[in-house]
Image 1: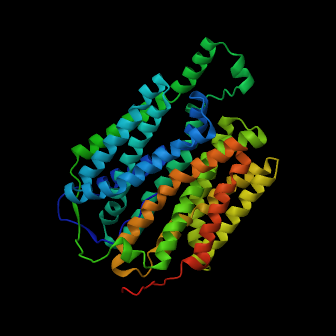
Image 2 (image 1 turned 135 degrees about the horizontal axis):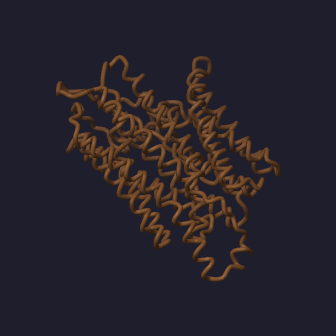
Image 3 (image 1 turned 180 degrees about the vertical axis):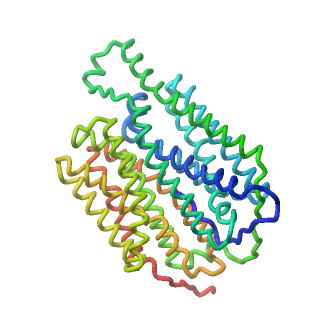
Length: 429
C-alpha cells in the first residue's frame, strides 16, 4: 500500500544537496514500510501459535496496524507542514525502530497486547513515512520525469512485499505445527518451553529490522536534503462540501471495502492453505511471497490494459474475477482452492490507485480533502479481518472468505456506476 500525493503543489527550493542521494534515501522508505506490512500475514499464524489465540484475536494484528495509520494520518501531515519533511521522516523512522525493538520484550513476556502496541507504533511511524515520501520523490529532480521517479520508487514497495513473506517464513515461522491434541498432551513445563521458543522466533528478525531503520534514520540526520515547500491554497472545502460529490462518497466506500478485502485475502492465506490442503506454514509463506510478486506484475499489466479498456470497466472486471476466485476457494476442497486465492492479488493490483483516481475526478477545490478521505478509508483494513476472524472461529476459515468476496462486489459496483461524477444538491444550497 502506498499513499498518494495530494493536489497541493509541492516544489523544491534552491538549497544545496545531492538530489541523487536524497532520492536513494527516500526510495529506501518505500521498501521499509512495504516489508514490515507484508510480515503481518506471517505474524498472524505465528502469534496465533505462540500466544494461543483464536482467529478473531489474531486478526487484531491488522486492526492495530490500520488503526495506527488512520489515527496518525492527519497528525503526520500537520508535523510535515510545521517542521518540514525531513524532520517528519526522522520522527517516522524513530517510531518505526522503537516499535520493532519492542518486539524483544513482547516476545519475552508473551503478552499479545504488547505485540499489538509495538505494531501500532510501527504503523504510526510508517504513516509519517508514507505522508512524506510520495511528494518528496516528485520534486527531487526534473519535473518532467516526476512520474517516472515515483513509479521507480514504488517498485521497491513491490520488492518489499515479495521479500517479506519469503524471509518471514524462513526466519520467523518455525515449521513446528502441533495439533490441539498434541499440545494438550504436553506437560505444563514442556508447553511453556515450546510457546516461549515460538515467541522468541520474532526477536532476531525485528531486532535486525530496528537496527537497519535506525541506520537509515541516522543517514537522514547527517545528510542535508533539499528542502521542499507546499503552496498554501486557501479553499472553502469542507467534509460536507466534498461528500456532496456522489462519486467521491462511493469512492471512499469502495476504498474502505477494497482495503478490507485485500488485507483479508493475504492475512489468512497461510491459515487457509493449511486448513484446505495441509500445506506446511513455511511452504505457504513462500506461496504468499510469489503471490505478492504477481501483485507487482499485475500493476504493469493493468496499466497496459487501460490503453484499451477504460479504468472503471477494468476495475469492475477485476473485482468480479476476484470474487469468482474466492467463490472457487470456498467451494473446492482440493489444492485448486489455494491456487484460486493465490491468483487474487494479481487482480487486486490496480484497485487502490484506480479507485483513488476515479474518486477525486472533477472535484475542483474539494480535491485535496477528497484525497485525504480516500487515504483514510484504509481503516477498512482494521475492521474486516476482525469480522473474518469471528466467522472463522464460529465455522471455519473457508467460509470466512465470504467477507472479502462480498467486499469485491462493492468495489465492482463503484466501477460500474458509483464512479460517475455527480454533485448532489439540497434545498439549503
